[in-house]
Amino acid sequence: MTSTQQKPKTYANDVCMSLENVTISYGNFEAVRNVYIDIPHGQVTAFIGPSGCGKSTVLRALNRMNDLIPGCHLKGRVIFDNYDLYEPHVDPVEVRRRIGMVFQKPNPFPKTIYENIAFGARINGYRGDMDELVERSLRKAAVWDECKDKLQESGLALSGGQQQRLCIARAIATEPEVILMDEPCSALDPISTLKIEETMHELKRSYTIVIVTHNMQQAVRVADMTAFFNAEAVEGGSGKVGYLVEFSETERIFNAPAQQSTQDYVSGRFG
Amino acid sequence: MTTDSSNDAFTLRRRPPLERFLDTGFRQLTLALASVVALLLLGIFLTIAEGAHEAIGTFGAGFLVSSAWDPVNNQYGALVAIYGTMVSSLLALAIAVPLGVGTAIFITEDLIPTRLRSAIGLMVELLAAIPSVVLGLWAIFVMEPAIRPALELLHRLLGWTPFFDTIPQGPGMAPAILILVVMILPIITAISRDALNQVPLELRQAAYGIGSTRWGAIFNIILPAAISAIVGGVMLSLGRAMGETMAVTMIIGNSLNFSFSLLAPGNTISAMLANQFGEASGIQVSALMYAALVLMVLTFIVNVLAQMLVRRFSLRY
Ligand SMILES: Nc1ncnc2c1ncn2[C@@H]1O[C@H](COP(=O)(O)OP(=O)(O)O)[C@@H](O)[C@H]1O
Ligand SMILES: [Mg+2]
Image (tube, chains in turn red, purple):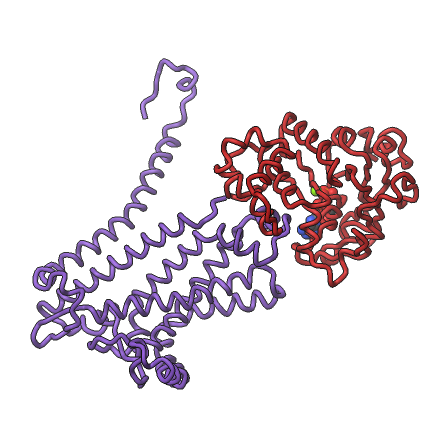
């Protein structure tokens, strides 16, 4: 087991979030252990790896969504903007306002499309022109053309791919600095997937993006940096424990990985 | 069902007759069972309307606004009981709904440790198992004496309003309302808890993921998503409150004189029916039937209003 010592120098001064020796457990079960990652600012970072290795768990740790799961506990430090997000005085609500999230299954509110966007903006204290914000957010998420004539219809009336882009727009409307996406395309068709990937290329100009994906082609297409996770059985443990194998530029991970297990995974061979 | 024999694809392989018989048989059976409820309701309504027929003819709509209930002179008006029914059940709801829904939020939204949560849940369910006659006795011997100082204080402070202008002296509307609260609280809590638990995790994540506070998420997303089931529970409990006889009869005072005051003895339609039906004869029976009919119609109106409210406020997912 190795942690990433080979962190790329070009990004060293421009780290957005960093995980320092993060270990996350559900009750007594350790899901991932000893993770070190420096997520670069203004880039797309992908988490890949076999299912159950803790990608979602680590992603949720980045904006304290794990707080909603009873018994979930984190050791180590998650540094963002010079704060450890898990210090007792840090307000998880404030963390989630600055670090937005898009979930695996599209989950628009059962409200109108307009209200889906406006709701988040309002609770974040947005005082400007709401119509303008709704249009801007939907445009950024590349779903404006499909929505502009039915802003007062339910968000649930859209197709799956449109719903997911609505959810991206909803996340953007709260003006976060980071957007986390947990397999955002896993429930979508290839065309919707491509649209969301295009959206991501647009978004990384203004936001730092972290995406979990089980689709390696997608990681190659969208990500600048890639973290490969794996899971191993430990003696005396009840299940497999996830760990970070390697974190590097996407090209390096896919073409010249430092670890044999990474090589096996990206070339489709499993040990 | 007619089958088109020219369409070979669907006729070459027929389902065995037994299977088709079971299919249609099952459909008829469920239809029959479902109609039983409707027929029962209709039957009860017709029986009561038939019984009330004579009183309706004699007293007309004046029955609803007259407070005379005089078996000696055969003069009947149900205002005391109608007022008592509405006031006691609506005020009981006004107290029990916030308490019950609040308790449900408290035990579903991860505000307290799991063990404490299940302990509270268990206690609420045990409350539902107490027979109403026991609650009535408890109300007479324990609760009413215990709350009387508080009621006296209310009278001193608010005695200038018609609702508190009598001196509390034992059984009355206020203790009856409180005992109704005790009786309907478990229904509201249990149904609200189940409704809140039904709200999908994705919806909660969506709310918290955009930075809702806990209260923001509960009041803007989670409660609206659960509201139609909660209102269903509230309606059930309203039915219980309006229809409760035993405990209410024991503590409400069964007065036949009209008073706005919550501190004075009062009456409800159900309590009056329970008290008088045994000894009534002649047109008094018919008057009681008329009162029962009023009760049914009241319940129906409240239900319709509640459905309209729900349609306005609920989030459909
Ligand atoms: N809510 C939870 N409660 C308990 N264990 C969980 C929970 N979520 C995930 N796990 C466990 O944590 C491990 C990592 O899960 P996850 O982060 O979802 O993996 P991935 O997203 O990489 O497929 C798995 O073994 C899983 O069973
Ligand atoms: Mg996952």
